[in-house]
Amino acid sequence: MPFSFISAWKKRRRSNTRDHTDPWIYKPAEYWGIEDQTPQPTKRRHGSSIFTLKEMEESTCSFSDENLLGKGGFGRVYKGTLQSGEVVAIKKMELPPSKKAEGEREFRVEVDILSRLDHPNLVSLIGYCADGKHRFLVYEYMQKGNLQDHLNGSCEKKMDWPSRLKVAIGASRGLAYLHSNSEVGIPIVHRDFKSTNVLLNGNFEAKISDFGLAKLMPEGQEIDVTARVLGTFGYFDPEYTSTGKLTLQSDVYAFGVVLLELLTGRRAIDLNQGPSDRNLVVQVRHILNDRKKLRKVIDPEMARSSYTIESIAMFANLASRCVRVKSRERPSMPECVKELQLIFCTNAKGLGHAF
Image 1 (cartoon, rainbow, N blue to C red):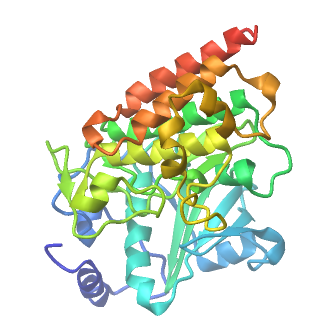
Image 2 (image 1 turned 180 degrees about the horizontal axis):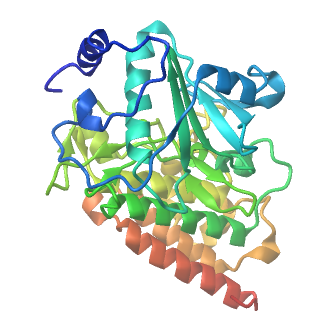
């Protein structure tokens, strides 16, 4: 990076005459030195509310265990109710000292990017809190939690095939929007797309979350060479990990892994399995285009009456192309959207349902 983002921030903090407990005021990415090699995006369509620590405490009943929704790499997530009565999800940054700088960077990237994006398949950022040393991100509340929990987690009732296809279509639309310039003006690679970052609302509509590792692509370029490979093990694009070359197709690979999770009900990486069966892609890639063997990997907990083998075969074929080793052989996200819509219609028609 051309200059230190943290040192630039500290320098500006020292020259700021406001009291140190005042909330941090939104500044665009280049102010903080984030991805400053990229052009300044177009005008922001909407802003984000700024909250104080006191408001965060009041909305969560002082972060009570009753309001705890879960915990991720960034910290704990709580259910909260704002003074307006709106129910939200509040992510509290809780990181060890060694990761504070990294967390601060992800916090600012997420605020900067989500404040300028607007799509029904992306989780909305309601606001944020940067009160003193405290950092919170406030999102719209997603009643059904994350996709992974519905596939192989704590949820008792497993999703049927039409619901899984609906989720796949929603997530594909969200990624296609990011890749197609959106309001930011240039394509964005999510870089950490996975089943736990696909959230579901009360109608099982999918919305992509967690943009802390998102990358704005250099203007006019389809490849960006990065010094560090970032993301989640099990979803890494093999070409990205071997060369350091990040492309939009890196998201397509991760999307393909999630398609395999939807098909099989298995985790991308399952450490409870033997060494040869831990990686889902390695385990099933060779049989995705073999209809006879394909039946063995369909999630046994999915209602048989909810799917046709034809739609399953089409879905498996798409997933197999998304996880190809060479990025140029993978489909684009807009192509995935079209194919998934066709698969949904094919399944409905085969079951005799109207659509």
